[in-house]
Length: 263
Image (tube, rainbow, N blue to C red; front, side, top):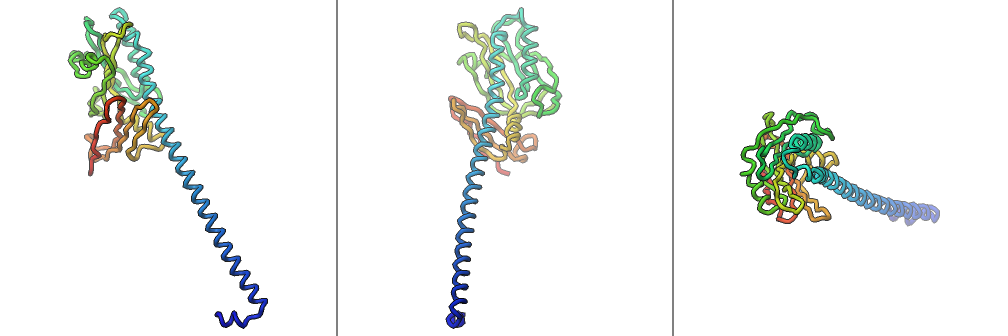
């Protein structure tokens, strides 16, 4: 080949040289363009993923915030005496019906002759509904004042988190959730009673999935230091035999250590 090129005419040599240079130049340009496009696509993918996680975190944070903002707005009513008991129960029923992440609550005041009572949402409809779709049943809560969360909330006069567990509801459905004790205080900040919420953990899994997040475990840290821990649990490791998303919130104390179950 080189001998043939050596004996070729000058014109042929020039044409061949130009062709080689053009091919080399095209390959260099092609490599540069591909590398640049790949870099842009990678940066875009990272930005989209970060935005997705931010949006998902904000969605969960908004959902959690709504639960406690609504509860705080009922604080004055919750602290009232038994004269407003029917009105109080109706407000709490409305709160439970509209708070999709809360499936049950119990409340009681110290030295209340009527005692404590529980409200539970049963026969849930569309779990993706933004408003309530179930029925509220009222139950007695004779052991409410002996509940360890109530006693701890009374002793520390602050919100207390329990440990996640599977709860069997009145309609025989089973829900994975966590109890949160919220203290009821008088105008001077003294403890008057408490409301214990049963938070549906899997409900937050639906919030995450609506943003396309939740298939793997990850952490989100809010600006106020709240740590949100989400862990995808395989079906073989859950009491219900279904895959589940566990969620934990911690502010002051360390995060609950939960080992990832292996199938």
